[in-house]
Length: 425
Image 1 (tube, rainbow, N blue to C red):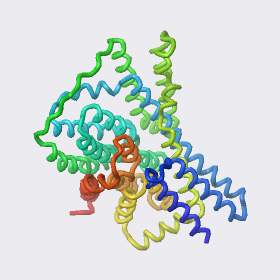
Image 2: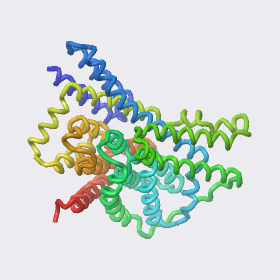
Image 3: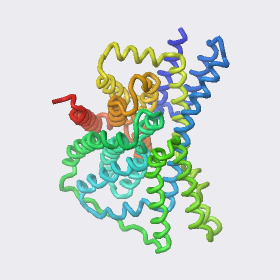
Image 4: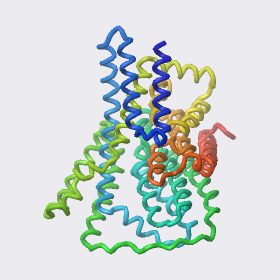
């Protein structure tokens, strides 16, 4: 009975998240309520409230490490953006060919999402295309490709996708190994849809508008912040490897150094001009609802894990599919229907490191399938949901125009991974 209630609450929460646009309810509210209700039901039926509270705080420690990591990363990215650091990249885009622009935007998205994160990169690149492209239809197609590229780019980097970060923080994967194993499958999952979509824009031209002139001092500050931010973000995996401290410690250290650099640059400035560049201002601009969304959904998954539902699901999948890769594909397909964050969290709860040790192909395959699979439907990833909001993409339009491209990339990436792993010959 309790199992049915918990699963029902979880499903209803997911439906509220999936149809947030129709319900006009932010997904963070639905996720938080789902998490609270799941733990409330769990503790009310438990004979020992102290045991449940202890389990909750244990899970909260793991969840907090992810949220602090995201908080630090998003703040650094906001600092770069407030200093117009990304213009250094976008100003290099001078082509008038829509097809060439699609290749450039996709390439930048794929690389940036691995260095920063796919959510922020998708937001930045979609906003960029909104300034370059005047036709709504063109922006929608570019936005669809950005979702595919951002999710594919995020899959092979411990910094690029929340789910890959979760696996890295949880000890299921190591940074260098996930890069080595997934960069080629992720690249194929991105490039094949790109080639197919690019035929739509063959021979079509765009009219680019000139960028605003900025002083040499402003450009110098932008260069410093961009360079420092990128170096500090990339150094986080190295910090974990050397110190063996959790990644969020490295990210918080990077944020503190960035804070100091930013303060030194603007120490002689005063008033409103100085305030717009402060870390406090950057903290106000970060996507707080997304952080609360992750908190709520991870709490809900933790409740199912503590109650034993995920272990039961793991047993069912293992008995039904009898194959690591089929399980990974099944979870990847599910990630196109629901957000991949709870799916990976569920997998972490279902399969411990004694079943699949660190850097086992299962975890690598899971990062690939849940990362790229989320592109098949617009609400299947955080990047997709963000882009959907920016360009007001219709769910059905994406399903008809973009989903088949994402699915082709998803299948191609899986085939490449299986070939690399020696499964297909």
